[in-house]
Length: 115
Image 1: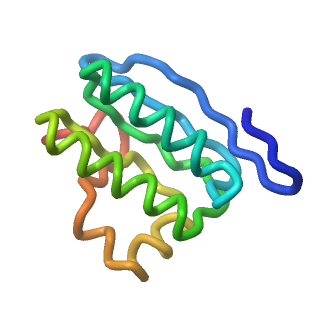
Image 2: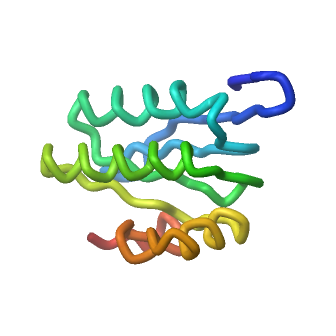
């Protein structure tokens, strides 16, 4: 878990079939965005198809969304899969406000992932 004062994000890395899944919990904000970015980019550098389970994220800010965008673009360049799984209501509202819900592959559950 990254703990930066009031803001913390927890994560768990696991495999689900052909995908590597990062489960995030808590808040994804400017104070933890560099570490979150590093997680994503390390997985993509290893050539892993990546899913981010955002079902337990309470809050995400613009820096968190920027991390997701960078991950998506990096995966695209490397011809890897990158998708979001079960974003929480708070995350979906930010993604919709920024119109990013049209950019990312968003899946209801890991079992329903199709690219």
